Length: 282
Image (cartoon, rainbow, N blue to C red; front, side, top):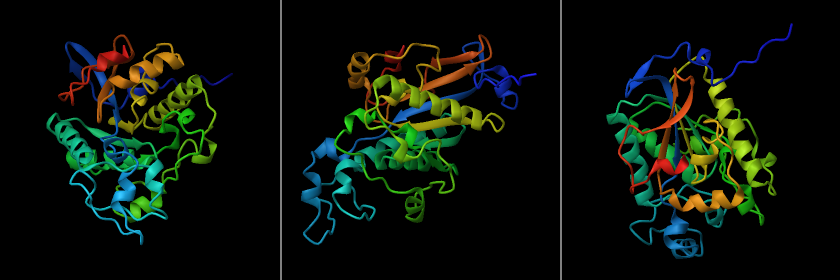
């Protein structure tokens, strides 16, 4: 007799989770998807690296919104494709974490794209929450590879980030290795990659409960949630049209409601940042 596969969206999935209530509807836990904070290259242009490093590779804060200090890298040019956050970006992320803490949100599991700006965002959210959660880095959470036809970024390893004070789980085994990302992937493949990852994350934590946070990119708020909510993926044109709506550190929230027994987008439990309207995802 064939064994029936468990559905991560089923009620059984939440057997150990506490029941909560919102507007008369019961839910078991929530999934938060968040974009990273303000990035240096978008705020200052690619020339910020040339302005900030001398001929010997020494870094100096050339503007108060540039980082006070930077993590050592093999080459300063690595920051061109893998930008850090600005000081404002780190403030945005910490403020979000502080708001989550005030709202008594119980985020136990944090996942991040390997992009440095996403790891920094996740770190500052954790700091703001005053949480002991660790960051699990997932290459599958990276943005659409179609924007990187001339070469992918060089990412810092989890072990290296951990050794430099980032709350990263260096022992985490990702669903996909960075080398397996397809440089020529289509938009439907991008949606499929993110959907497989979120299903994997939900199944991975089916017994231990707690809310989940994924920190990634602008399009991630749609690519991680759309199929989970039973909607059709967007076309390439549709995806590009909605990207302008996603502000830095914008956040969306899904809850698994016991009735009707599925994931639904719902109002986040904290105020918006830069007037982001999550209903653009509907």
